[in-house]
Image 1 (cartoon, one colour):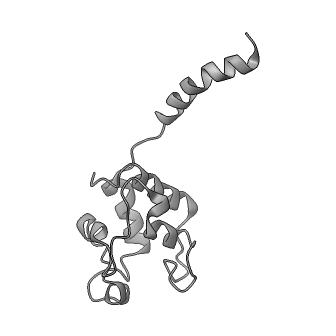
Image 2: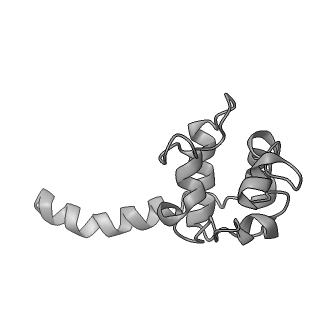
Length: 123
């Protein structure tokens, strides 16, 4: 069998196996600690981030509600999720989050994106 045919036949199986290797990201175990460490200082009722945007990150329900301008998470689509772009510093520098020196590390941003892509579940 030629290499091209073998690759064509085996590639779908390899893709299925690889997709099964990613662990499910948990809101309670994985995402809440990120929010606590990097977001809650400003995004709770009474603080500047909440007052400006209306975005509270105190609970899953608050996060999914979004801002006074609309949702910031599109479950299943991190590329369309505003919050994902903001924490990855892919928006205007005046609105990227967090503003201070406590920028979220890339591995945590990737975890956050995985959670969104997996459906942004309350798990």
